[in-house]
Length: 207
Image 1 (tube, rainbow, N blue to C red):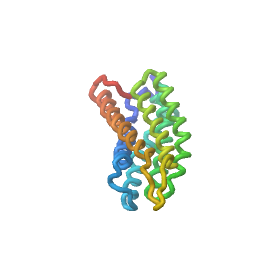
Image 2: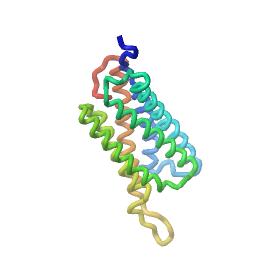
Image 3: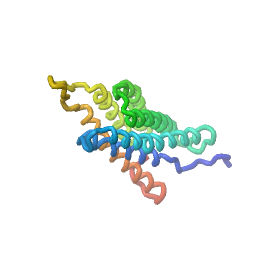
Image 4: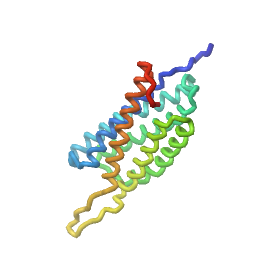
């Protein structure tokens, strides 16, 4: 008998829900420009970014790494290694995103941040489609799109400045908002379906 029997209860749904909540808070504002960005609004959305997509994902990532190493209860599914990497990295970077938003810091470095996160998102696409876990492959495809849009939005690529100093619409930011909403809804589905599969014996396509 194994000292650490395999567990079916990997805490991935907390990460799905946390990230999905963050996307569904930030996405509508980016797409619809409501509420308008202000100092007060940036503090509010920054706090949500730190706590939901930041803390929830970081916690899940650490628990998965512990369950793969010190107490190997998740080792029957090697794909959990990719999940641990992703949740940890995405969670930590949301701490930075939320803090910078709340403090009103320059968003342009987010464009450089997007490059390595495109790479890790593409890695997730390869790992999960190769493992036959297409719902997660779709998720990481969406995350790849998020960071491509983030690159354009952060550097305001294509934005024109009029003679009076007014800027044209940031289409990269609008696209980022749309992708945030779509991926956020997919994350809500994964939360719903994975929980039903584990807790109620359903057999829905999920994590």
